[in-house]
Amino acid sequence: KPPPPPTSPVPDYSVPLLLRPEWQLQMYDWDLTINWIVPNVDGVKNVEQIAHSSEVDMEMVRACLRVLRHHGVLAHVDVFRYSNVYECTPRAMDLLSAAT
Image (spheres, rainbow, N blue to C red):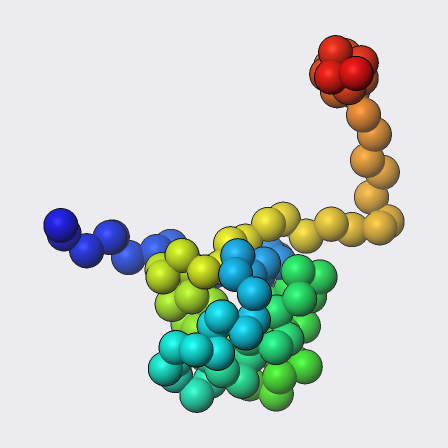
């Protein structure tokens, strides 16, 4: 089986989300920097905030997150901003009423 293609660059505005519990990731021999930033990946902080809270260079954080995503233990979601206005569409309401 050929290796998977390289993953795309990690956008700064995305929020990394661990797909496995942190304790499972600690069982592997990751790079020291990856072990340093994983506790800061909480599904709320974006890439810049993770770099600041872990006191690691931004480029290193991007590289570490890319490695984790390559191995399938990390996903990225768009940042949720509390200042934005989110609302359900009529289609979402139809889905909810059909489910009950």
